[in-house]
Length: 202
Image (tube, rainbow, N blue to C red; front, side, top):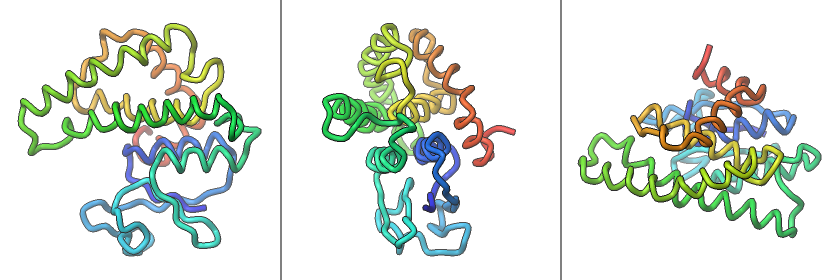
C-alpha cells in the first residue's frame, strides 16, 4: 500500500492510522504546486481530484477521500481497534463523527489557510468553528476519545484538523478538554512516528 501525502495536511491522519494499524506501507510525497510525486509520477493521473490523501493498493486500485481511507485502513487489521465492526451501531457512530469532522470542522479551517480570503470570510470561519467545537468539547468532557475509552481513526482525523489551529491563529483556550485531548494524542508513538516521517517534528 502506498500513501500519497503532503506534510501536515489531512493526509497525516491516514499516515497516523497506518502506523497505528501495523500494516506495511510506503510513502510518496506530493509536490502540491506541480502535482508531481516524489517518485516522479504525474499525480493527476493517479487521482484526478488532485488532492491528498490518496492510497494505491498493491493491485493498482486507487482509493481517495480521507474518511473512507481511514476506515479502509482500520478494516485491514480489525484487531487494531481503530474502528468498530462493520454493520454495528458503533460503526455508524464512527461514521457520524468522521462526517462531522470532514463537513463541519475540516471545511471551516479551509478559509483560514486561504491568503486570498477576506477578513470577513475568515471571521465567519472562526465563528463557525466556535459553533461546532463545543459539541466536541462536551464529548471529551465525558470520555477520553470520541468513541469512548479507545483511540479510533476519528481521533486521528480530529487531532490533525484541530492541530491546524496553531498554524492559522485560531484560539483554543476556551476549550480546555480539547487542548488536553490534543496534548495526549500528540504523545502516541504512531503520531510521533508519522510526524517525524513528514518532517513536522525532529
